[in-house]
Image 1 (spheres, rainbow, N blue to C red):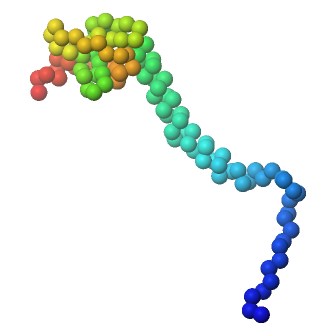
Image 2 (image 1 turned 90 degrees about the vertical axis):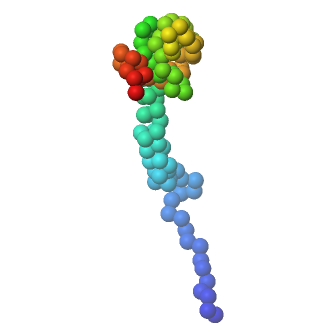
Image 3 (image 1 turned 120 degrees about the vertical axis):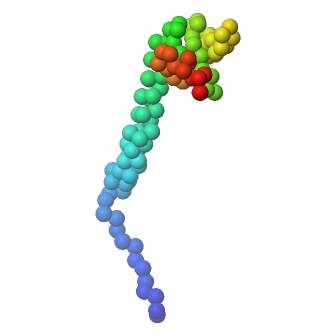
Length: 111
């Protein structure tokens, strides 16, 4: 006969034993995911919340979609932006992306 018979070998551990070595790749993958994705995103979200809490009248900001404006009124959920002389737009607070340095808007239109 050309094929040798295969015999089952006995397992080394007891029946139903918990194998931590088998879980190591999964644990390592979760730790890597936490430090590369979850933690930085949570840090950015915390910075954004603190930036929104510090908004005040007169700040120059960039809202969602690239709308550039100066804050005229800050409410609980909404902010009123002056995007041109005598033109105001009301936007939701979370749509504010960045607070710009003072005087940025005056320099933005002279290109």
